[in-house]
Length: 70
Image (cartoon, rainbow, N blue to C red; front, top):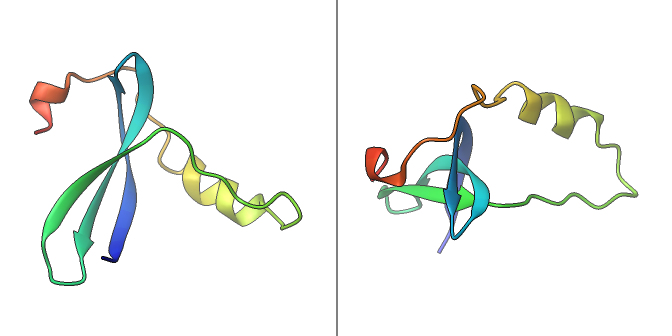
């Protein structure tokens, strides 16, 4: 399965761990939500572009309840 995902500003906790909500779509066109705890980029690479793009989606500073997402 392949997903195309985009970061949102929403942060929530799952099992006590903060996760960022990403919204996505499968190759077949099925919409989905992805909860990401960490994203890693190899540290030998230039991270500046990656960091800039992720910072554009900074959370609003509040956690949201999962019941409001699903």
